[in-house]
Length: 602
Image (cartoon, rainbow, N blue to C red; front, side):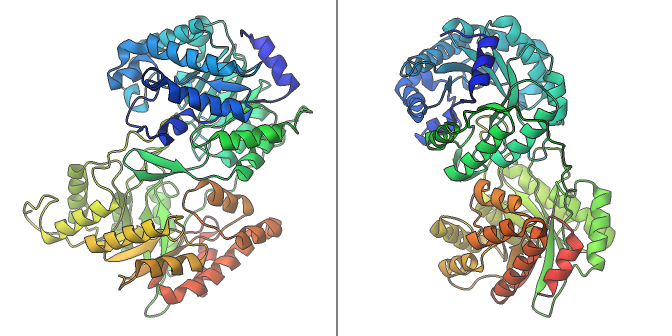
């Protein structure tokens, strides 16, 4: 089947088209590691790739994408496959084309990623990127794709460059999709408005967004795109945030009802093509197809006036609320990225009664001061007690040891050990983590530093005196595994524990019972929810987060008063968990001082 931009827009005018979901997720679920080249499976395991396409065709989608994300010469070269660009891309198109024969009218889209990974970008000249894109696009067009998806572009200059290359190299419609982080900016710092304005006027069939964020935040991006372009829009959200289950092994949680509800809103916002990205499966797409069948009557959607988001929340302050209870506050390097702003906030929170400030890791999508450095800065300037998060995903053992020894020499004494996750970049976003050790290994490493040796037992000139903390997660859906990891952290040397935010005291009680035995001091994290959208996002898009149905219902019914209701619910929770814990870590997202004043007295 051949198509043109005019023909594609004519189909958009008839009804929204439904694209498939994640190919990489399905291949990964079949046992393939994200350390390998998934496009190469079109040569080495074509039956599996065909089965993935068939599952989406059976779900009723209108468009399937070739298994060619990352199949440029530059990216394949990282796996020693740079000389197989043509074979891999042609095989992928052939497999998808064969699957599309099952039903008349199915379009085959050639999936094209940025020519280089984020880590290749700095050392690759623009002409090399252009050459790699030209080669891949030419093969895809010659092999018979119906259209091209330029997808998961985090840098606007690369997307504009790719559009120019694609339009010159192929005679099929081109769809240009940028990817946005949780702050609604691309990696290059551009807003949806700036992306829309840059692409409007270029010879593309549609523009849109895919990957990195889940359906709720994709909806906000699409609404802003709609305000600033008349081009057809596309949207392919992730299923939410992934859970790491092992080295280069990840899984997603999402329920189809939630995904479909937001896709319906994407259609209401004027989206002409919807599908899924990382973590989405034929199950969700079948539900989308069913919903879209009720959405045939397309109406033009006027650009709604944009409402500015609430200011990014500061975080809150700890205070001693009695001889045995510590109240702490958590800031992150995202919410307190400006050191001067962080210092002013910390001073205000200290005056409000803060006893300790915990500095958490941010999302890693932007250059930020490290948690340890920010904690040290606040401690030295204000004299406040601090705790810093240290993550293992982005550092080797040697780098971790060096950073810890340096931080200790400068006065840091309390840390929380976490595994962490890399930022979500691209269709297969998790292959760039280091993970020489996980959080358990980091606890053991710090315990050895406290004993005066490195991780291998070699003596150091002096010993450290860190208080070692570790995270536990009462919201984990795998209670046995969460309890086992907590016991391992304690055995490795954890001297205090901090929970992930708790929304149901029963979850904490169950986890503590499952862990058993004598526990080190426990701090319970409590996050006052500010509205139904926030609660729904956490419940459906953030893995291992359990928010009771009664909480969701209360916030939904509260409407404009949701923030006050969220604070009352948090106060009830504080009263329920206080007997179980040494203290609290309050992590409000708005009106920090008021939240702390309210919860400290609960």
